[in-house]
Image 1 (tube, one colour):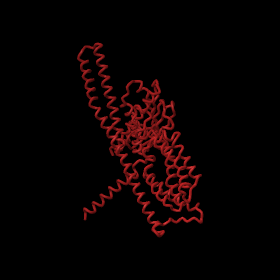
Image 2 (cartoon, rainbow, N blue to C red):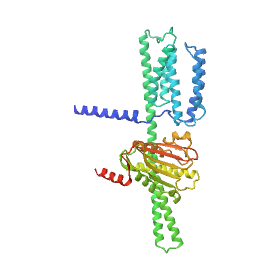
Image 3 (cartoon, rainbow, N blue to C red):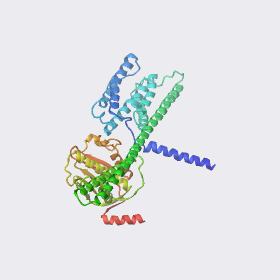
Image 4 (cartoon, rainbow, N blue to C red):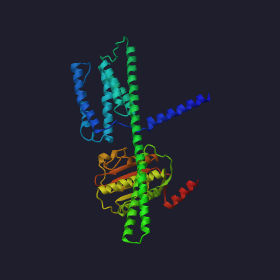
Amino acid sequence: MLNIWRFITDSWRTTCKVVKEEVWSAPLEPILHESPLRLRFLGAYTVIGHPIFYWLWSHSLPLPYESAPLRLLLALLGIPMMVGRAPQHPGARETQVYFSFLVWLQLPLFFTWMYWMNQGHTVWLVSLCTMVVIYYHLTDWRLATLGTVTGLVLGSGLSMFFAPSNRSLAIPSPWGTELTATLSLVAVFAFAWASAILLSWSSSNLRRERLAHSLTTIGIMAHELRTPLATASLMGEALRNQAAQIAPTEQAHKLLRLADRLQLLARHMNYQIDTQIANAKLRDLNRSTELVSAFDVIRNAVSNYPFVSRLESESVELILHTEFAFSANQQQFEQVLSNLLKNALRSLYSARSSFAPGAIRIEAGMHRGAGRILFSDLGIGIEAELLPMIFNPFFSTNSASGHGLGLAFCKQVVGSAGGKIRAKSAPNLGAMFIIDIPVTIGGMSSATLSSTMTRFSST
């Protein structure tokens, strides 16, 4: 009896965990398999398909109801998916919102309306079932479920309100009775709906597995680079020892400079490897939290960054207004600031900056009861239409050298600490990243906060 109860409780916990991960925690994908070509194809299919089906159902194979104005309106709505910004930026929020509205309007709402206005004709019964399967393969299964329910309810309500009073809304019954036909309709629709949910869930799960494998591969490749870097560091140390054993000549100075260069290169590359490994853990971050000092995490991130020149390091200006502390993983949060610093330096190089003092500015203080960290640079900036996409995994404004994981990692870490990160920018005017985060201790001087954190930790 005890084993049965344990089996039931374990099964319940497993079920709750799966539901939480798949329904609530999994990220929404408004456009499945998003690409410019896919959006253009769907737009063309919409624009061309409605006139063809209007001619088919009104002339070639006439049905009880068709509407030329409605077909024309829906066809015109497909034009933005063929041209303009939508197909070029499928990951933009505006494109995702428009796509979600368009497929909801043209699939569950329109098909339900046509089904009832055609008095439950067999053609529209089959079309309605097919629509459900298509809908679940165009958008996230959770959005498709919500859209199917609302489309069925609203489409049915509108058809009953606008249908002529002398038109029968009963479903024709080839099986003999109205009840039998209704139950058959429910069974067919339920089968199509259940199949669509299963197919959509399995495909979305496969995409997440591929993402996890890609991130793991990135981490493994970065880790494997440590072996040749360790050899380069040893060579630098050997050159330094060799230079120390000979007289202080020009040759000795060259050996020392070469040794310094090798060790600086090894240090820089090891730092980049640490960055790639941290970014590769995007979907498996360490959620342990500790009390983190804003000033300390900023100073550590800047002091540990492997600047390649004095100009780079002197271009960073710290403005620390009011100290505060927050709950987070300190190592991960330092990595957040390092990612932002790396992007800022790259932006300055792209802008051919002179790296003047203050070209990169990091500010920290209190804002409306919360902690705020401002990270700004005077680089090339980010185009407005790209801003909504910069925090998406694998999206990068620099396709030549960027992998698109750095800012996604930043968003994940800041979000795990209960905060938010957003960006403001304009082309050739630089960029600013704003981190707002709930504070555990705030509004104190640096010394007072340090003492308070020490007592808090010991307690």
